[in-house]
Image (cartoon, rainbow, N blue to C red; front, side, top):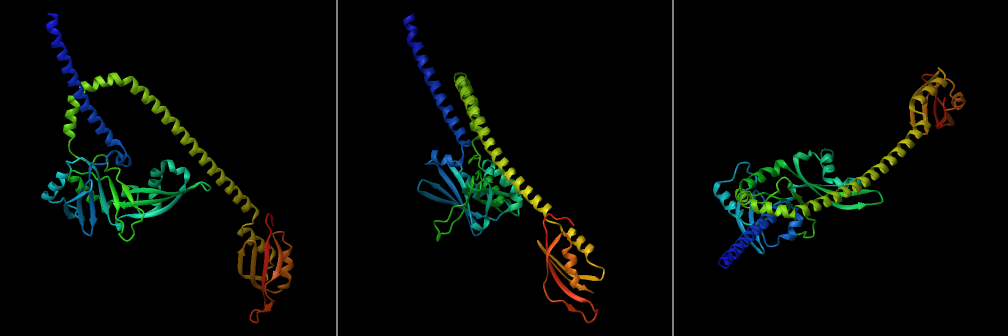
Length: 380
């Protein structure tokens, strides 16, 4: 009896093993697809070399849909790029048929007048959170706020001597681009990137590219229901894999978290050190300016001292203060005495007549032009 049952048990074990293996393969394929959705676009370019992509080239008033696969290109449709209403149903069906392919990316190529670029200089400490810094600075550096544009940047250079970054900020106004993106989305596609068309006469021109962060999570709008069904069917296999892999995954997560925390702490320490040095320099500069201001008498002090020492028979018609020199022009009944009076003040020195004293035949007063130096740190 035992000899009779043994082949049946062996066959059943083999069948179960094959079934579990097939289920595991399906789960692994699904898991890799989900992992692909969270990878950055630049990394996907190395992992996907044969998948098709769609290029949407905007030229004049048209948007041309081109399906590219390896070295082959196929034009799908031409639509009105300026339309704010949905495209016709026939065109949408043609474009939707292409979304069933394994698309690597959906790129929109626009004319250069759709995108604005500006060169900025920022502190090196902003490098760690450059996108957030640019969003904060957007309304100061451009006519737009951060929520009115799609934007990206290129780091052009870093000057370690002055702790500054030179970047190129690229932005596309949403009011121009979003109607096109919404129509593309209605066709079952998700645009992931905007490229600026470069002229044929300048092939070495730097490529300008803007990642559409809020449009690039997935290139396909279909298949969610199928993916959900696969998750339900493979729940048993998933639980088994989780039970086996949980200790290793837990250790890996802990190690990764500790490394991330250590890296964050190092970055925060570096940023804090740079901020502290910047504040120290600003404080030293502020102190220097305050000391200079205290040493240099103010305009009101000069006016007050001149009012005090000049006699009542003297009229000042023009007073120019260019630190540390003061020029005085006017009329007096005895201009020659003014030099002695001004020189007697502790606030002034080096009194000189800029021109000879002349008499005003109408008023009978003597016209004078005198220049004096303001003494720093002196009090009247």
